[in-house]
Amino acid sequence: MKVFPCDHSLKNSPEEQKKMESEFSRLLNVAERTLGLYFSYDVNITLSSQRLHDLGDESKLLPLWRQADPRFLWNNYMLEVLIDNKLDPYLLPVMQGSFQSIQAAIGKDILDVTLVARRCTRRNGTRMWRRGADADGFVANFVETEQIIKLNGHTASFIQKPLVNRHALSVFVTDLSIVARPEVHIFYRFFDGWVLDLFCLWVCRVASILELLIDIEVRGSIPLLWDQIVDLKYKPKFEIVRLEEATRVVERHFLDLRKKYGNVLAVDLVNKHGGEGSLCEKFGDAMQTIASDDVRYLHFDFHKICGHVHFERLSILYDQVEDFLIKNRYLMLNEKGEKVEAQVGVVRTNCIDCLDRTNVTQSMIARKMLEFQLRRLGVFSAEETVSTHPNFDESFKILWANHGDDISIQYSGTPALKGDFVRYGQRTVQGILNDGKNALMRYYLNNFCDGTKQDAIDLVQGHYIVSVSRSITPTTQKGGIEAIASFPLALLLILTGFFFATMSLRRVRHDVWNLLFALVWASMSLVIAAFVRANGRIFCNRPRLHQPRP
Image (cartoon, rainbow, N blue to C red):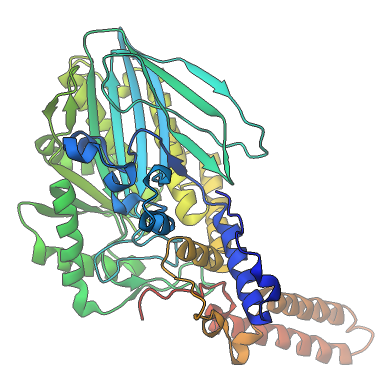
């Protein structure tokens, strides 16, 4: 994405207005680095295949932006002025998420597996600054994942024509419709104003048998009003806000899911004890009040059962959800594009971040569903699994690992943890080391970078509205110690104190007064360190534009 200035009248503006413009321009520069943005000229990629198939004839004639699902329309706010001026030909829906695809041969059958992730914009943001739900039941990090299986009937060739750009991002193209003639459909991925490495996928019918199988899963933060405000601690305290509204918020959230997906099975992967225990307990209590034949709740203590290496024990979870998956089916289209059956329910998975444990679990469910679908179509025998075909197995693992990394980078700034299990089917030493590195990087980004990134998101998506009469000053003014609080400065003073304390101790043998100097320097460092620890929040990079709840 690239933002261009269109008003140069600020040259004669007051200094305060120039300062505001400079601040907003800086935030737009941050927003330009947004990852995972996709658009298509001829396919409404904000809609799942099932919703796209169910569109009425009149709806299909509408402009793409009017067909779009508002939840996944990333540029909704930016389109408003163009919509008001009825510039439909120039309005193109943009979705944030992920797009991954592989092709594999199983005997005589050709399988195309595509993963599409759509990120909801209702409560969009960064890992620590957007947690839980808002009063309307919209949750942070809500992502709809669609696994599309095409069986036979298509061959594909890729024509690559890279554009000159310093960035190396991939673009992929796919056909999401059932067609009886050669056709091309295009997905574009863009970044920093460029469409990069444009690929075209030409599609033609080569067999009379074609099956399209689509399965949807969703993830999203625990739908309670809760926060986890960064304060320099590795794991900040969980804070549940307005507990008396928990049932109402949970009810709104699941009512919305029920309308859009049908039956819902909520799989909660958080720890039952420790810091996560209170969230688990309150979520479970709220779910008991709304549980019905349409909405079920299942708790699975991922860390207690699987630990950090025994993820094969997720088979215990699958045994508990298998009946729901089979009963609620999946979308299936035949060679004529006719719906053979529809998906009437969805599994909603969450942990705390809805990244690492969630991705491992969703990839397991997707694998089991794929095996069930292929057995039903006669591609797999009763005992055959994805693991029986090593090349396909490896590609499928990489597909889901890349999918999880994309979602994680958008929310936390780093690839997913536990990704080695998804990618290789087992935990590895290198994977554990990478998890440690990524965990430290998350700590740094959460505490010292994500506040500004959250402001950029709020600005671009209209959560904060800029107007001539509105000043940014009240939200950016700091008073007292907060006005001079700087973590780099505090860290420098602490290290300086310890350095001089060490130097003084080395000179004690020559002059006993150096012992006193050493104690003074060390005391200064300890006092500053204690102050920083006690007032960690004011030393962190925090959002300043929009406060979503009191």
